[in-house]
Length: 172
Image (cartoon, helix red, strand yellow):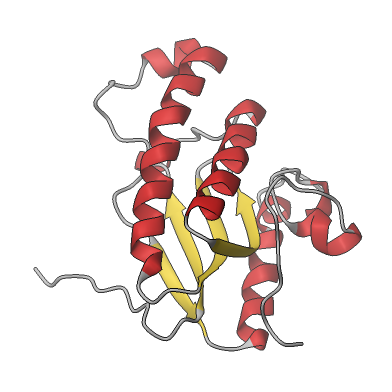
């Protein structure tokens, strides 16, 4: 089996996607999404990362992240997924105990992999930002992207705080 390689040597921003294990809707509850956003802000500070956009869906996450150090993405992703997995499993037992009881304790929270996409231009970054912001609309969760609380859309539309410090690092 070929080893999957992550190319993180040119210090480009990355559009990353990862999903819950078996695409379970583990992030369906607002409390789960709130905790995920809080942990994400903490992990970005810890790893000196910049977030340029994100969306938290019931069964997956998209984010645009950038790190000043070469090769920092893998370490960040490992830490981000491990920390959210541990903490969110506890939160899940508190907010939806009957659903949590059906999931074996040893089962992972996240699928093992994540999928990065190298953002080499401002045009491609805007394209990915629009794509992720419209995920909740396409899923029928809201009528307008900025209505989804667990996304950076409200920040870009009206400058509202979305729980994660955001910075658009691309030239316009």
